[in-house]
Image (spheres, rainbow, N blue to C red):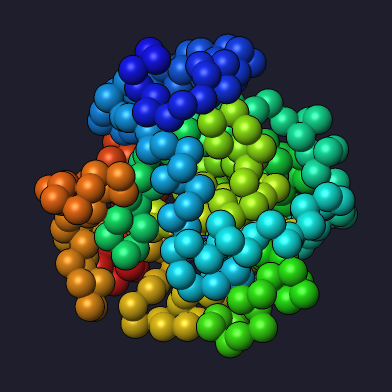
Length: 300
Ligand code: MTE
């Protein structure tokens, strides 16, 4: 399996023993659910070659630290991530501030190798470490009336230099329908390659929703609210015609300014051929059922 890793880290760094054991348990769990595999949809886990640590941590979108792809790696060191807590409120039985350490102590961290497709039509494969969002929501106890989950990133302009500019309406906010949030593919990621989440990638905890465009995967989360109304989302507020609430990866629904039919793989070099984009980013088998009967052009 060493051949899957292009980086210079040792094998122990990339797949900690605990994560490996958990992956085996999850695979068993997924077999029980009738899902083919957790890593890659139609492709088997072994067919996905993750991007290098260098690629994943130097080519980022994190507008709180600037709009350039290399700005987050340059500026995010200013972010204080300890102490950290996430406020969970709204329609939950146990609202409150959940300290990062308390959350991590209660969760089982696994490795999940997922395709990651940005709405800008580039993609990577990332070996995340994290736990299912469902487990965190269960900790807080979701009440019957809840239909959506709203997420909020930290607002701290003294440390997040990009927040001094009106690029977006800060804080960055995102949302999922409750069934999307509870889906076993939906991850709260706490690390990459077995290391704590780098600040530029959204330390200490960020969302990863692999079948949706990357902007749904909100970083450095400080608040999660269970609600009965569809929550506002940052990119939809900025440009509702271009960015919808659902934002499922769909090669047949183009962005108004570019095609979504193909994507450029980061790390492939400038002469690399673009590859076809897959419906739901390759996770169709697992998630298509969430959208049965919905017109995916209307709910983009
Ligand atoms: N979360 C916050 N708070 N701010 C952002 O600017 N950018 C989004 C998403 N989450 C963003 C964010 C976009 S557009 C993408 S493609 C991914 O983060 C990038 O994640 P990565 O840098 O780990 O690849």
